[in-house]
Image 1: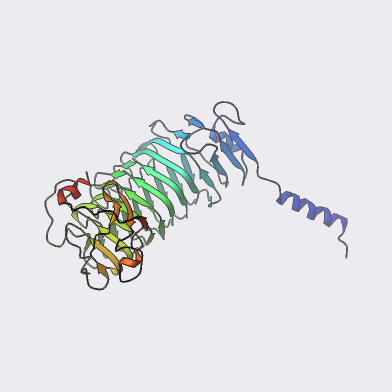
Image 2: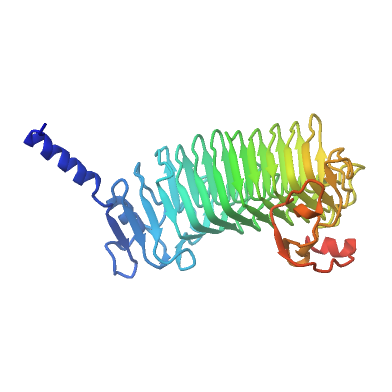
Length: 423
């Protein structure tokens, strides 16, 4: 049977339309592209188009408060984040990106920029110095957020409110800060969001005042996922040095916490939630009072194949030893406990017991992990490490890092040297 000519023409046009390639608009502040500013490119682009930004530093009008409207667009740098910068110049009242009830999904991509010198306060734009999003799920890839500061509101770099499932992959948050009781030195996420962090690093972020979460604070999050994430050198004066979870379920897979310091929970504070933590390494974290690595309140975290070592509660600021039982790597407060299997706990200043799970009890071994070089934070494992399958009774790899060297000497050390790791 033959198609009628009119129907055939309609079908052919439909096929041609569906195969039409997305348009690419070039932004070059040196004058070699279609537009001089990023916003001009975003405004011209249609759903599914790409805006390609040439290397350079983009400042001023047209390169801040960037708005995608309701469109899913790929915004990509040509030369990568090291050579392509959006600089907010510490001007109050401006962000890099804003997604306000705009409905983007993860086909909306921001790829390959350094976003820096973002500054906000309650009187000039509110939370989230670099990015503010509600009801949107953009994907950030190959990004650096550097020197972002919320002076009296939460979310030093990013603030997420209401539902969404954004993705962060190959992203670095460094030297971001918030001075707010609501916390989140780099990120505050709340009320229904479900973010995914994949190959992300949080380094030297902080929150002061009575804030929690030197890197991230999450409140009433639907589900957060962390895969191959590194938290290092993050600090908080009150709550968790790195990750603060309140009524927020989370899954952490192959996550590393190194030299974070908090008021309670040097690495993690969890309240009324049961995070699942598998194949992760906690090294040289500390807390001023309780839980050098992890503090639980009304929570039952599930912990599998992890390493907790060289935790020290007073190592950072010389605080006095806390009350008996409170300086361990874990502190389980009222209504809390842990579901724990196949863990190595070693060299923790308050003892190697983990909320009543003592070494030698079948679930915990207490042997030096034999890192390749703990003084430089190389946490890969010596070939003779008890955290490799041949070295433990479970035949499992413990921690976030596999074998990285052959039989290095493990030096005898002292608490003075271990404490120096935190300074």
